[in-house]
Image (cartoon, rainbow, N blue to C red):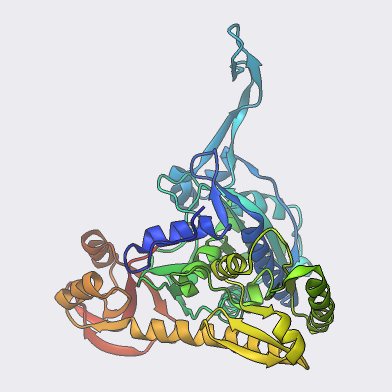
Length: 490
């Protein structure tokens, strides 16, 4: 298979689709709208999971697991929630197949469920029905639960990682004694997501709150982190929801407070998904392939020997063995590719495509001189280094690469962040140089919807601690108290 990619400039969407497949991250499955995450892609997702899981546990959360199937009646208990997901729900109606007279397999019409089951699009309803049996007193609070799971949302237009019918995610669901505690939890988890995006993914994000139109179904407030991709489109990278007492009231989850009075608990939910894989690809990669931040790369260093004959390979193997051991003692993940069925040039292209942060080449001359050739994927720069103390040099280099990717993405975002003072200017920016657009909005859902219908741009968020400045709404001309972030989005 050719490794040549479409270019970002020629066709960004095609470039992305090709890269995900050719870099062995994922592929389309036999089930329409669903994907197979391949080992290399899943290794990146595991790195994400491990980092996030530690951050969740460091903030007091524990993992649990809840059913994939949700009784349909549960959805009718929280009206706004079911309205938000009704068009995306997959429904199980029967529980058995049978063989027809012609030998084909058909649904057994006598095996109809008494109540249909919904394959979870999100788990608020099943979890809050469960929490009713877990919470009686203030002593049971706060309840801080996270679940790693898969969900199904029936999508008509799908794209690997960014929007698939089934995807992987985590969803946190917490219960608190007061609104203040629940809001603090919502904000804390937003900060966890932002820290993860910036420190691990090397993706700068804007923290903010969603408008009423964009809010999670059933939430009082939705907090989000928004990232900007290289093509100037926004991607929602994580959400954290203050649910108030809506779900507690719907499922009758009460507790006795310290005064002995009964009250409904206060709730949050928060989640990120394999959509982050798409964000990672689109934030850093180039026309040659993936560019992975070292903290999330399945292996951070690949070593490729260049040799003639078994004797020379044996000498290189011995030197590399010591180098590899020294780097691994530093916590650096290393792959030594001494396969004899591919030439070094092919291997270089393969690891370039797969975004391995550092490539080390070692040949006969390096054995003589005690050197190695080191190539970094982010800048494509090469240098010759002494083998002595190589583990510390590579450790420093990996830190440099991680920081450089963040700074490069931040500079890109700043370059593609604009201010629009009129609707004409707003539309021109969207058409010619898309990105984040800071513009005044009158605060009404009607204006927001009109702009969306006419331009396909949405309000990505109202930034936290946003500067309050009186102005004029770009669409309606009415008085506006602040600028908000608009963009077209994935």
